[in-house]
Image 1 (cartoon, one colour):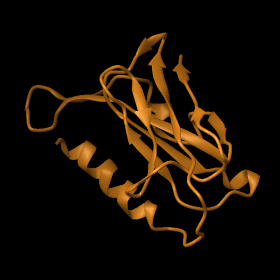
Image 2 (tube, one colour; image 1 turned 45 degrees about the horizontal axis):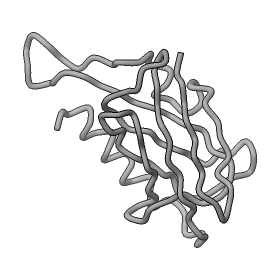
Image 3 (cartoon, rainbow, N blue to C red; image 1 turned 135 degrees about the horizontal axis):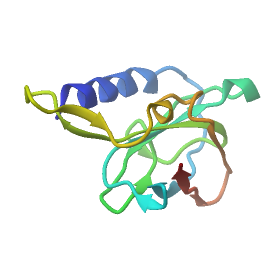
Image 4 (cartoon, one colour; image 1 turned 180 degrees about the vertical axis):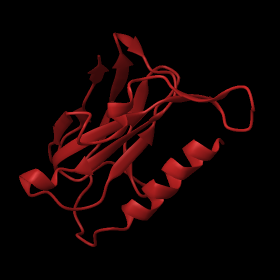
Length: 135
């Protein structure tokens, strides 16, 4: 695991414990595409949209080789109902190579939940299928 990926996962682990509000989790899955092509690696993070009064824990998932994801909140599958801002990170390369380095496979603003401008609503008591096609 590269240092950049390890840092992202450590930050996620810290953020997961930020709320004690117990609520039911709803199934959330979908596909992440960049310019119409499925991302083959990365992570997707759903952060509660505080501008819409949302609080709670973040939900996240690894992006699989076919571009699909299935969210988890902590170790439990799903996400709480409500509005989210979404961030996506997809990196290639390694920090252990002097010649290579880590390269983002998508534009940098997508790594920030505010700059990405990606938003969605997770609805309660149903399976939520949410696809994202990044430009």
